Amino acid sequence: MKNKEGKHNMTEIYLIRHGQTTWNNERRFQGHTDIELDKEGIAQANRLKERLRDVHFDAFYSSDLIRANKTANIVAQDRGMPVHILKEVKEIKFGEWEGKKFSEVMGGEQNFKKWHDDSSLKMVPGGERAEEVLNRVEGAIQHILRVHPKERVAVFSHGGPIRYMLISCLKMPIEMCWKIDIGNTSISVMRWENNNFHLHCINDCAHL
Image (cartoon, rainbow, N blue to C red; front, side):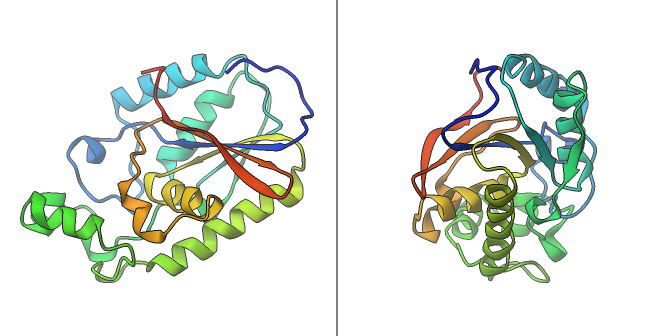
C-alpha cells in the first residue's frame, strides 16, 4: 500500500476498524459505551501505523468514541495532520445489550448466529435499527465525496458501521451485512470513480 502521491483520478476511502479493547476480547457488545484500547489494541494500532507509513492521506476522520479516535491518532501522530470527528461513523447503539457478553444475551452461539442474520437489528432492545445506521453512514460517505474529491481519506470506525458502509457503497443486499468479517485494525478500501464505487480490498489484516 505504498503511494506518496497527493491527487488521484479517484476518491479513495480507507475504512479502518479500531484496535482491540477488553470488551472485544471478552466478546461483549460495546455499542456507544466508550471503551479504551487494551494493550493488544495499542500494539495493533502501532503495527497499522507502520503498515500505512508510506501511504499519503489528505484527511483523517474518526468516530467520536475513544477506541477509534485513539487508533486514528496513533496512525496520524507523526504526520502533523488533525483527526476530524465524524459522529456518523460511530458504532451501532446496542441499547440494553451494551456491556453484556454475546453468549449471555443470546443464550448460546446458535442464537448469536440468529442475531447476525437479523439484518434489520429489530432484536436489539433500545438500540438502533438498520435504516438509522444506513442513513447516517451514507451521510458520512457523501460528506467525504463532497469535501475530498480525488483525494485519499482514512476513516477510523467500528465493525458495524464499516459493514453498513460497504453494503451501501457496493449496493449489496442488507442481509449480507453480518456475513462480512471486519477484524480489529483491518483495512477496507473503496474507490469512487466514474460515479461508482469499486472495492479494492476488504478486511486486510496483513500487518497483524
